[in-house]
Image (cartoon, rainbow, N blue to C red; front, side, top):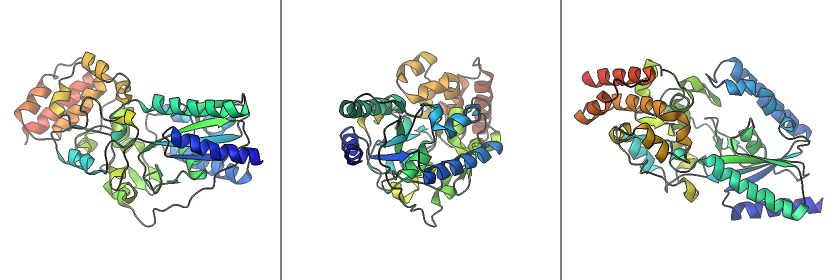
Amino acid sequence: MRHWQDLAAQIEVWSVELGFAHVGITRLDSANQETALNAANTHFAVWLAQKRHGEMDYMARNQDLRAKPETLLAGTRTVISAALDYWPEPGVMSAISALADPTRAYVSRYALGRDYHKVVRKRLQTLASRIEAVVGAFSYRVFSDSAPVMEVEFARQNGIGWRGKHTLLLSRQGSFNFLGEIYCDLPLPASPPQAAHCGSCTKCLRACPTQAIVAPYEIDARRCISYLTIEFAGVIPEALRPAIGNRIYGCDDCQLVCPWNRDARVGAPEFAPRHALDTASLVELMAWDEADFLERFAGSPIRRIGHQRWLRNIAVALGNGKASRDALTALSARVEHPSAVVREHVGWAIRNLEKK
């Protein structure tokens, strides 16, 4: 037993060396863990039954895989969770300033730099290789938002943080981090959970522009700006468009107001802003053609939404802004776009600006 305790301590040391902010270990063969995981899966099933996942059908299709870790890796006994910070600058004032300027594009800060999937997975693979060098070959599998994993639930159980009222993982160091996991068959000792520290605070609920956080710990993705601008490919409901403001990819509002994020730490260098996305204007981004989009977003999580969805989102943001000649010119250049979805949002934006 002492050997496994020593290895767990060494894993923590290695994780710090690899740049992870936190690491925790969950054992799957305890009664308490099984009870907690069952409760989380029941809550998730109710959420699906309420259709709050919108058009993210993969969530319903993969429910069994999420509920039973051994279906993703036979013989799984332990989950090693790790958190990697991504916030691009000290504090949150720069992000708040960007939201306050209707001519600027607001991109969720997690997406300003490199694609986190590859960055987190590479570091976890290095961690697994270090473990293998000590214990010999063992069965494991690395995940970084790449499979149906109850990542927040595992990170809650093993003390990396607690589930905030906005449903994201939260700790005393904030919530601006990515999670990744190593499923394995090693009998490592479990890390203790930590108590929740949201108290009576409801700032995240009140800050949500579209009231997508319908109650503490409950979110309706169909109203969420991150869902609407990233996951949803169709026509954004007109009633929700004004609340989107200048947010063209994701939304950070519920995190920006959180007291635990007040002193947000700078994250890994891979997540530093590229192509001046943190200061870019809506007009200049609307001018990018598809070749520009694909080239500049190589290695970026933004690339997967495609150029049409990108233009759709920018059109909404321009329509929410000031009625300037530059804005109308940028929109007018897209009125005959081949995509009916793009044309619909461009037309709406032009009508909005002409009323101002």
